[in-house]
Amino acid sequence: MDLIQMARELGAAIQQDERYLALAKANAANEADEELNNLIGEVQMIQTSYQNEAGKEDADNEKLEAFDKRFSEVYNKVMTNTNMQTFQEARQAIDDLMKEITGILGLCIRGEDPATCVLEPEQGCEGGCSSCDSHCE
Image (cartoon, rainbow, N blue to C red; front, side):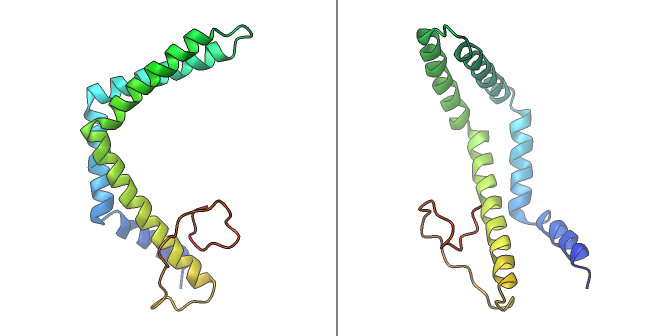
């Protein structure tokens, strides 16, 4: 049994899954959204300007506050964009799928029965991973 080949087959199956296809479609919509891309470019310029100003020995706090305010405004526009919201939802679905897959693999590594092992629902992270089986690392 070639585990690497099986991993490749799992990867191919994931790429056929509706959640992966939704993410690919959402990513393409984001790339085609000129307004969204302009906003993302503006966010990056604001971040660079902020970092440049903050790096100065005599940084102007008023400029930093203005950059911070503008960043928040533009970032909110990015995050309320319909294409970005669709992308975020699709990405969350893929992240959830991958957590489930890696969680099941982790249980199998611990000796659980691959056919019947079940992940416990996440109870919320409290910051310490030593007593947790949520596999969020």
